[in-house]
Image 1: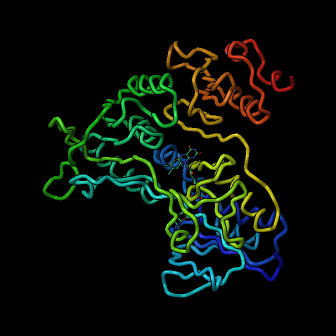
Image 2: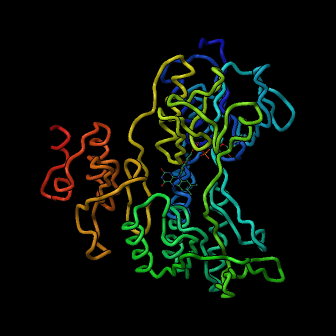
Image 3: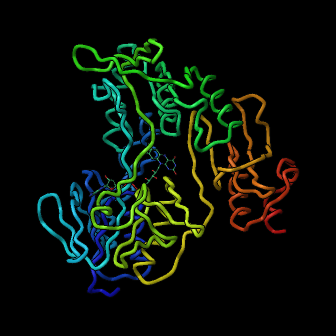
Length: 417
Ligand SMILES: Cc1cc2nc3c(=O)[nH]c(=O)nc-3n(C[C@H](O)[C@H](O)[C@H](O)COP(=O)(O)OP(=O)(O)OC[C@H]3O[C@@H](n4cnc5c(N)ncnc54)[C@H](O)[C@@H]3O)c2cc1C
């Protein structure tokens, strides 16, 4: 691409900002405009369920890039602007106000939308999902109201976002019940042994956990506000706030309407490329085609950042596949979980550190093996293990379970071997 070209980025989140900045780093001298439908300048999403919701962070700390910082890189940010259509033949995008903008390169970085409940009472006031800064503000307001009125909080869904919200609510002194449809917490991402540990952690902080929960309806008061959750057995858990954390759907509607391949996300290759050479995508809106033909959907800061760099390189005609080991983190109470690799399909594991001891001072890692090979590790308050295991996985080094379980065995030394 040359200085006469124009790149439009749809979505002013982690992936959109990363792609725009990576284009500049790679020497692109043409126009770059980021179009974002939120009114806020790009901000960090992870703190929304953690420090921001707890009131421990200000707006400046939450902001990822202000319009001024982007302008200094010659990147234009247009906030509060929704793209409603992509015309691939004309190489233009149509905005919700009816105007059109031309592009030579287009980046889709539209993120994802929380799944909503389809139950009676689900649209009552005080039934909230968490994806955006505005959602977090709404939840914080309702939490303050619940504290004031001594009302409880129900979290529907024992995944990362639900559990982080539960931990933050407990920190504020709220009574919290988590309703999980499955028999364990974090069932899609953690091995059973860790699900049990997280259940014990939340119980030790006073959270009520209900597994195999079948919800019949949300109870609504005469003013239209939620007052509780009714289970299928007739039991009612009263609540002034219900936070729904039951997963997200990729925002791939624009891509699908433009005739680009979508399958629970816009399908891209390891370089963020679509079937249209002018169009790339990055972040939560994508589904990445792996070499064996399967699709991988990741929702993480690392994925948005790395795919953004790859997508920028692809627009510049360069090959930069994202093949690094996936990693993710979650903060609940004073425990930092750091995950490296994907543990799906693991058939055995080894533990390093003290997982069975006092939960308050826990620091350990669980290493997952499939057919004798190390495929992933989950570390709790064990940052050094996490950094080392990422290097082991990147280098495809697979120490024995005995080596990893031995705390006197230096992990960094295993990489050198
Ligand atoms: C509460 C919360 C906690 C999280 N915690 C962690 C964590 O601890 N660790 C971790 O790794 N990840 C975490 N994540 C996930 C991580 O934040 C996301 O994976 C990452 O933000 C994805 O970035 P993205 O740019 O793809 O999408 P987003 O950040 O969602 O950005 C997409 C943007 O595009 C906008 N948009 C959509 N459609 C249009 C349109 N048609 N026109 C214009 N704009 C549009 C959206 O409104 C949005 O602003 C968390 C997410 C949430 C919500």
